[in-house]
Length: 125
Image (tube, rainbow, N blue to C red):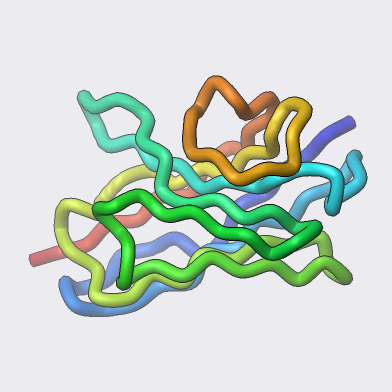
């Protein structure tokens, strides 16, 4: 059974940092890509970043480029999202997800088949 468990969310002031973790199980970690998404109230789910565990390729949404860094620890089947210079508009529930059948990086939600339960990130102004 595929499982993805996020942690690390919380309340932070604007300009602060958080590191989210996503622990994966139930599949061969290096055969797929892991993505981070976020969804704010009343808005559609938005792709934030993605990493291919096999080759380390990464992809970022323009809104987070230069502020967020995605990384993976293949020995721990874990993907991290380090978020710096946080802004109030980064407030959302953050989800990690694994691609359905590809290892290439993508932030298109339809490419992902299994999702975690989400972790809340709140940035105060």
